[in-house]
Length: 143
Length: 143
Length: 143
Length: 143
Image (cartoon, rainbow over all chains, first blue to last red; front, top):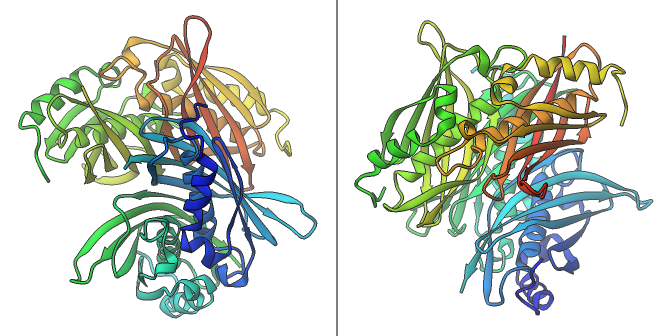
C-alpha cells in the first residue's frame, strides 16, 4: 500500500482525540498501522441494550471509527475522511469484558476506500469471539 | 399488518426504558405505532465526531433501535427482537439541534422482518433534512 | 432535483441499448424520468435458481441497472455512471410472469448519488408484490 | 465447522445443476469444501455492461450462488438454502478473461449463516485481481 502521509499515525491519534463520542463511551485507539486500525472498548453497563449486551449501535460506533481511520492512514496529508456507507452483520450477542474493532483496508482509492472491520468480544479469560463484521466505504475530502 | 401483540406499545416502551445506552445519549421514544417507531435525540457535543457532526455510530444507534422496535410492534407477545444486520448510507453531514430516526417495517415475517429507517437532522428553524437511511433485518426470538 | 443534462432520456436509452446483458436476459427500459427509472423483465425459466424462482443475481441485475440509470438522469452530459456498492434484501421468493425494478434517487450529489430500487413480481392477474429492495451508491465519472 | 450433511458435495453439485441461470451465463462449480465454494465464469461479451466490463449483476449472480452453496455445505441434509440479503462493494471494473467467486462461511448458525465472497478477475497471464466483495446472510429452510 502506498503511503501518502508519513505523519499518518500522529494525524490519526490527533483526530481520534477530537471525537468526543470516543471519550463518552470510553474507547481508545490501540493500534495504528498503514491500512490497519484497532479501537478498544471496555464493557460498561450503560452501553448496553435491553438484554445487557453491547448495543449494536455502539459496536458500529467503534467499527466505523476504526474503518474511517484505517482508510485515513493511507490518504494524503491535509485530507479529511468521512463515512459514505457501511453494512454490519451481527453474528453473536455482543458480550465480553472488552471489545476490539479491527479494521483493514481492502482497496484504497484516490476518492473512495473500501474497508472491513471485525469486532471481537473478549471474555475474562482473554478468549476472543467475533461478534460483528462491517464492510464499508470511506471518502477522502481534500481540504 | 397483522397485530399479534395488543400490548405492543407498552412492551416497546418498557423495553426501550431497559436500554441504558438510550439514557446515556439522551434519546427518547417519540412515536410507537404498528410497524412504525420514532426515536428523538437532541444534539450534544459529546456525541460528535471530529468535525462536530453527530457520529455515524450514534446515527446508527437510534436508527437501529427504531428499526428493532418497529419490527417488535408486529411480533407476538413474549418474543424478543435482535438485529441481524443493517446497512446505512450517510447522505449528508449529520447536523441539527435534534435528530429523529423514523423506522417503518417493509416486510414482517414470522422469523425475519425487514425494516427501513430514515434519520433526519432538524435545525433551529424546525427544517428537516434527511441525513442517513438504514435498511436492515430483525429476527424474532421466541422466549 | 436539478436537471444538468436535458438529453438525459436519450442518453439513458442509448446506454441501456449498449448493455448486452439486458438483451441476454430480455430486460427492457420501461420508464425514464428525472431521478426515476424502471426496467421490466419477463420471467423465463432459464433465469431461475434451483426452485424455479428468479435468481437473486438476476433480480440484482435489473435493480442495479435501474439504480445506475436513475442516478445517470441527474448527472451532467458527458459523464459516466458506475456502481460503487449496493445492498439487497430479498423479501419473498421472486415469482411472477414479469418483474419490474423501479429505482428512485434519494440523494443526488456531485460525485456520489444514493438510490433505492424496489423489485416487484407481477402475477398473471397483474397483482404486484414487492420481492426485493436495493439501497446503493452510484458514482459519476467525468469523461 | 460442524458437518451435518456427509453428502454435502453431491447435494451442492446436484442443486447447482438445477440453477438454469448458471447454464445461461456459462458458470461452473470449481470447488466445494465444507464452508467454502468457488464458482468460475469465463468472460463473454453478452454478459457485459455498457463499457464492456462484466455487469455488476452478473458479478453478484456468481457471488450469491457461491455464498448460498458455501452455507449449504454446512446445513443438515434435507434442508434448503435461500438468500436473505447481501451487500456488494464493487472495487474495480470487472475485467478479465475469467472470473472466480470464492465464498467462505464466517458464521454458521442453525437458522442464519453469514458468508463472505470475493470475486476475482483473472487476466490472460493468470494474474488475479479482486474486483468485488460480498457480505451476506443465508437462511436454512427445513423441508
